[in-house]
Length: 346
Image (cartoon, rainbow, N blue to C red; front, side, top):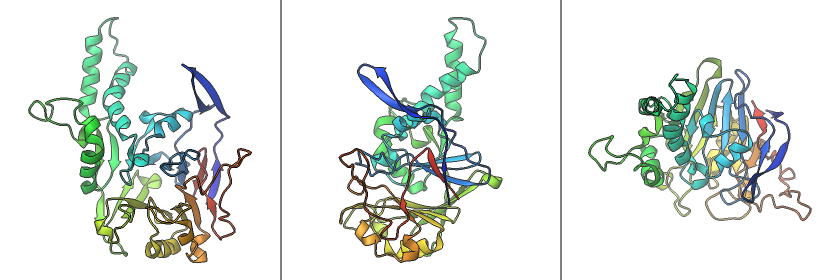
């Protein structure tokens, strides 16, 4: 694994107006990686309630192939810091329905259905005379209805139903009326996203798993997603939990996803993987892996692990403004995942 820092200038503060400001980098971040080289970046390394580390969403690339893993509620603000927006998102995987992982899906779907077609129609230069807005809107409407600007989303079909009905439908399903049938009919997930098939596969741990490939040729990325024991807290059987997934990239890189301590899987898969990125919290209980439990892993697994999705107790701010941390190196771990513009290449 190689740590790569992408040069996009300095990180600066700007005052936008109305007493509000923001931060941004000097240059727009190129999401593409080197041809044939798997690359992983983190938009943040914090838990859903971290105020210091941002939300732990990721972007995976290999050459021209770019895939976002989760779109949390604060992601669009983070993208703006890099000169990006939801219009720069080409593919999405959602691991589960907590807001720090799915909260920006509404903005993605609505902007790609209603804003992007207008922008595209304007960019095409229709040659219309000034004031000929009818032609512009007709062209934009045709682009919208074609579905060509829908973002591919990779989730198991059964979870897609819950993702829509329990997280997205209330804010999106009533955007239009009657297109799918009688007046008052509710729109569906595929009105906004291009739902891609994922193949169920047998897996060695006796739990549900799926696999799919994004991209082609030397830039193809293979994903295996598997069920994790995340929520509810007290449920012991994996088939009784609500959908939450870990990910294995190209059969080399394991991303634990949000999970309680899952010793059988992390021990065996951690031995198989070349590199491991693991969810971690500083206190016992709850629905994430406790650091004290993870210290019991074999040394060979521990030295592969970079922690992410950490609560601020794992990495507290010191009085001088620097970030302190549990001494994970002393305990045999590799460290903490860094965030963009730092990326990891494999």
